[in-house]
Image 1 (cartoon, rainbow, N blue to C red):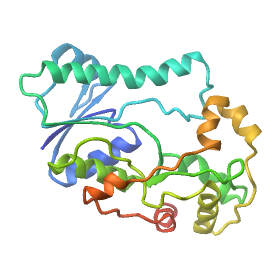
Image 2: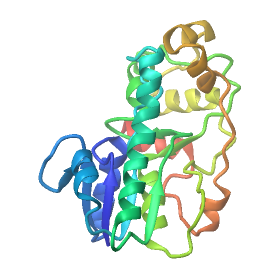
Image 3: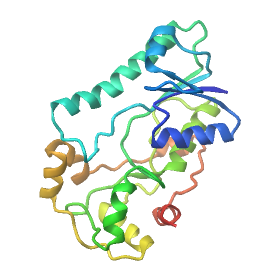
Image 4: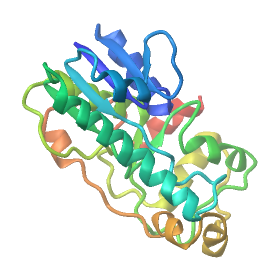
Length: 246
């Protein structure tokens, strides 16, 4: 199939593009900068949707970017990076003489684990030094997924005809707590992981609103994802982390 991927140059987009191409699909990326095999968002708005069978939107500013302060400017960036790109794609699809057969929108709820990016990139150094541990109480749920499975779920969704509606892109181990995650990462690295990151520090770094996501967490179950027939490559946390840190 011909697949158009908005925001396809990031961590998830790169993994998805590699998997799609490996499975014989043709991929065109929508990004800010023009390059071979890409179109820009301005080109999309100006010239319309290129011929494609599926459109996927992964674009969006990382809401938990620790290098950005949670102020009004960043909040606007988070909203506009999602809303404006989605609106542009939706408008282009509406006007297309031959609209795509499928339209996939991705929004974040889980922690995406993988080599070379994602949340794990910020965690490895303190954990390798033996300074890692749970965030706050550690009792909060900690939804996670391996990057290969997130790309796999998206590819599965666009390849089979019966998938519709919302799919939770999280691993089946939905009752993982933050403390259990910290312990598993420490075990994978062969390091202790008992030094907690106090809630006050989390609030100071991320701001009160963003800190809620880290300190309270949420239980997310991939019931409909499993019902579609998707087979996880990394359903268990220990195996996922071992593959990443190996």
